[in-house]
Amino acid sequence: MPKDIINRNIERQGCDLMGIIEDVIKENKLQIKKQKENTIHVKNSDGTEYWKKYDLNNNQIYYKNSNGYESWQEYDSNNNEIHFKDSNGHEYWSSYNLNNKEVYYRDLTGCEYWIEYDSKNMTHYKDSKGYESWREYDSNNNEIHYKDSKGYESWREYDSNNNEIHYKDSKGYESWQEYDSKGIFKSKLELRSGKYYLNGKELIKSD
Image (tube, rainbow, N blue to C red; front, side, top):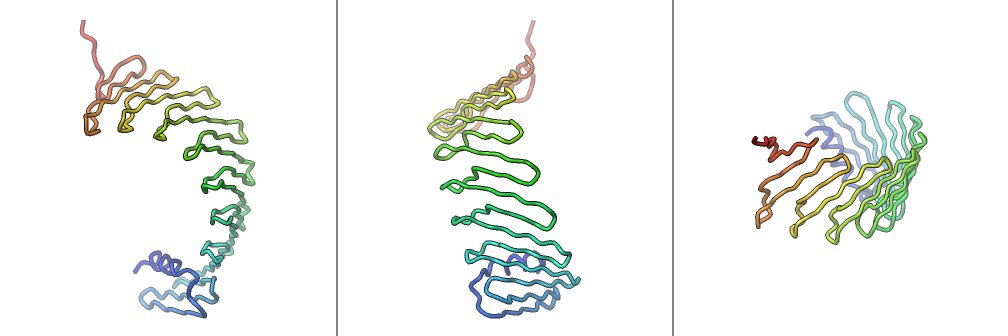
């Protein structure tokens, strides 16, 4: 059994095992110790080791390996990771809304962004570099309009089966898709750089 599969199986055991459990898998010479309710220690045949610690919801909150690397994580009440820090100097913070969608992110590099949603979809994105984008949706949650702070815009239309039948953007590209009554794709007409293409082949005007 491959080591990565073994490791995943060990992690899936979670925190429900009591006391000290030690398994030695002879064919892989892999030593696994569950020293406490929420701590796992794995020693590989090449001498490398790592330790993992979990909270009561089985979220990993600490990791350490024999190469000296360490990481720490924190979570909100819905088990979303809200803080990460490691021994290499990486650190970031995140926030989530009641639907467990990320609404804020910040890290030590200076990257920062904010996200807004309607009941289901992302509607607004803004970051610390000055970039912004906005999205609109129809009643079936299909994106119908997109624009960003760089001046790009796009529009989409759909049929009753939510198949995209028309697309147009501010760069001059436009396409029309056709479907049969069962929603199976039939054809696509495109306008690219002033030329028309049907199913990928350029349409040549006859004299």
